[in-house]
Length: 363
Ligand code: SF4
Image (tube, rainbow, N blue to C red):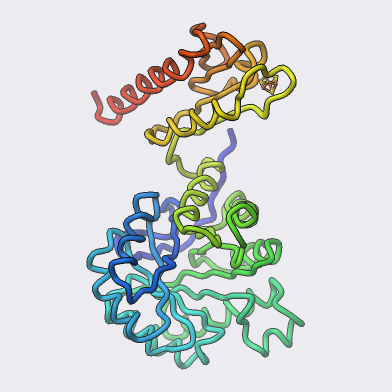
């Protein structure tokens, strides 16, 4: 299969995580607890890390939140990013509190002088800055010039801030150009990536609740990743942030850019299907949560067509009314009664998992 050729960007180090260059696409999310509630915030960070989150951003709306970061960063298992709007003092305090990266929205920070002052301190501490341009808070002169928050407006705003920081030889930068309109977002990133080699944080802002948000995020982020654009992603959802991480993993794995879990193929069913394939597929999906091996597992709805329709699967089941078959790469390997089908599949997956573990250990 043809692989995606990723655009080469500059590398930025955020704590122990590298963004850009040839580093894997990094998954990030944002807590929705009060940052001043240190225990609740840490609890959410632990949950997110367990789900696969690699960088975590925290809102810093006031000075107590900026100071709370100090206690959070030492206990967080993943690097902590401070999210700053409006008040530069909060960015300075976040740096002193040990944030591994600071995200600023220059559109509401109040001019390049302030941004440059922040960058000078960040440079001393070797902390990168994300220039997080947002369609909802672009500078007035840019809105007037382009007649609205267009893709070109987002790019011009980002370039202006980048150039201001380049003037003091600051290059420890990650850039984002987010809009809630998916196509505007795609166009902005495509255009910017032609003009700059700084690593890009991808996201569609204000994407909405779980179902709609995942679709918008997958189209926006997925299209760009398929173009080879993007170094770190956040799927914005009005939902439990753990869902953002799960969605991000799926998007990245769907494009073959990283492997986190078994890939599940299941057929859409049709009039040939004689069983409740939805329930069977849910059971297999649940079973696969215990594995992290990069195999493809298929669940198909009829014995005759199923194996052939899922030829790429390492292992699969096709179910008929009373019996089903286990198959591998389109070839039947065993016929079993319907009631034994799940158990047989689990045994085969266990075998594949232990073979994979032995290969990893070099046995
Ligand atoms: Fe229909 Fe069988 Fe194909 Fe599923 S595998 S869509 S049941 S023909």
